[in-house]
Amino acid sequence: MKYAVTAATGRFGQLVVNHLLTRVPFRDIVIIARNLDKAHQLYPAYLDIRQGDYGDPASLQAALTDVDRVLLISSHPNEAVPRITQHKNVVQAAVQNHVHWLGYTSFFHADRCQNPLAADHLATEQFINQTNLPHSFLRNNWYLNNEFPALQAALQQKDPIVTTAGKQSIGWAAESYYAQAAANLLSNPEDELKSSYELTGVFHTYTELIKAVRTVTGQDVQLQQLTPAEYQAWLQQQNLDAATQQFLINCQALMRSGALGPQVAKQTVEMGMSHETIAKRHAQYQDLPQTLSRPLPSLTEQVRDMLTPKPGYLL
Image (tube, rainbow, N blue to C red):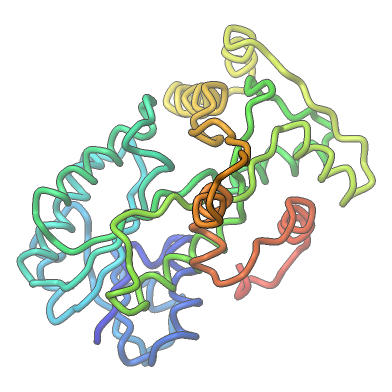
């Protein structure tokens, strides 16, 4: 069985490979990277390292030769080649190579999220569905690590954390847990796989996140809630290019809409309910801990881990 990880030189890809090495023989792992020099610097020579560029269909066709399972890690938006085109190139190469299963790192509730950040993910899911390729959509919620630059500035420069999210909750979890889930699904028996997973941490507000930061650091980190117009004016003062500003505006709109929080209203246990029904209601949004086979650490513990300096090999 050959397990391929695309975009394997990125942070998420490296985390996936590190976890995958603990689950399958190293001879069965295929590293796919656009930049071979970077891949050879990151990974030991005994791994099967192949060149595969999302913008080059021929390279992907060669890279996926004899591969049984592939994890398609979504590319970054605003590239020279549209992201949906990049993803289609990988999917088509998988189909042409008769890959047995494809995992795709999608977006939390991509099938119902009305935000530009989710549009390419939904389009990719729809394209994969049209191929009849056995697959799983790994719909990841927000990485806690996305907050690290702002938290670092708040701690070092005493800047406030600025948001427009208000009281909306977000299912933060450390990126490493999403990566481990991807490695587990890539290597799990086929009969245990579902077609989609809503992978999320426990839902918390920004106020709760800042409380966790204060607990961990002992510093009086401040939270500044702005309106969308105030946030846009604040961004214009940060010396950021237009594309970055728009990306951050989209991120905040996503949070403010509640799209990163629970998408179904909380349901209470009522008299006469069966144990099975109660269990199903309590199991909502348990895909991530179930895939990891253990509960997630608390938000405070994840913040502590994120803010603790580590050697490079631990990412």
